[in-house]
Length: 358
Image (cartoon, rainbow, N blue to C red):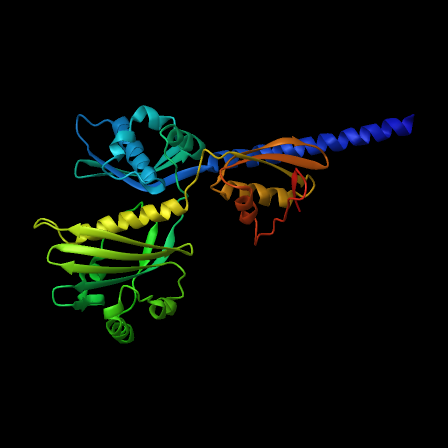
């Protein structure tokens, strides 16, 4: 009888200790995850005249609107002309997780402040879903851009510093742009190589030039100019997906080559976003089991789930002294979820209906 009671008390004590651990560890960790499951806009500067009409709440509201515009431009294909249709303050308030004023100054009767604004990812996705807009993963990418300008009137080929597309391409860069363009060096071998292939330029693959930069992602931009008309042939290879497209431009006397660059950059941004789109209408439920005594593994798993943009939500469904059961909502396919864990120290076992972590 005494042994039975002792055994029972020992079991209860272990459960109690385990419960305390989860209460402390997971409350702390889950709070961090909930607060960290956000998109942050930082280094956001707002200025306003400091006079009798100064209203700090109006400054904060202006920061909210500007931050919301930045995040929409970063994760959707909404353009700057359309953005004002989505910036009602009453909607923005409900999407903000937190904000802070990181700097304040008064200079020449002007109030200047810098903000950080964090948006709740889940609420933001729900807001966009109601408007039938799919967001994209805000994934930055370095890529090689090889621009070639051919003047059709005299069959003149302009390369590198002679090419205004090359010279002006990186002069302007929007803060919300995800693509970072690497332009090739002015190499005499490359110049001669392109000129030798000028009569077959549309079919030339540029592999000899691209291979020098060891970059898997690239865009070959060949523009034929005839007067004020420009016909662009675009060969873009992003995420190992080659897309060939054409675009025409006609410039009037008030437009410059920069307007072509701006239009092309927006097109390339949207193409990149489409490759990283999050289909929030897909809500794949995944059940994961993990050994409750492997604390480091638990911590690594939760960090991994937090880092995955396609995980819209996760929580602990149940736990015991042997295992924890997670419920995960994933905005893509099972295969993509499995691929997310490749080349990590978290091994996913998918043999049973409830997957497990090893």
